[in-house]
Length: 138
Image 1 (cartoon, rainbow, N blue to C red):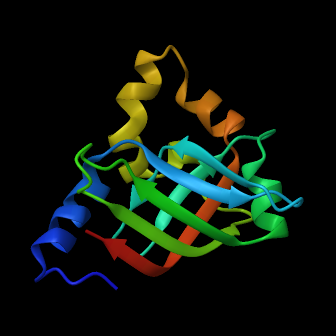
Image 2 (cartoon, one colour):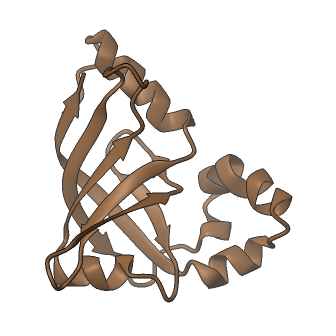
């Protein structure tokens, strides 16, 4: 899906591994798109996101698994990274505090907010996995 020989794709992959926020758009059961900034982990093939226990992301995905994800652009009309994909809620998936790469990326931020790692796992129990089906990068 991504061509690492293309400089824009390689730059997008770098951003996906280092940026802390990506926008996730789900669709409510009533058909309304809902975009939310989320923390994420990109492994080169799919995205790992944790949904809050009472938030709309999980029921939205259960009603309609089609989602999109995008990074903020560069403010000049470039740096656009958009993915369309299919999301699943992984029952029994590893909690955030058990995923070493996720903790390496977000653990210090979690603690700087005064949260505990266990509290993060408790408050964001829904393991969301997004598999991209299309990428648009320019």
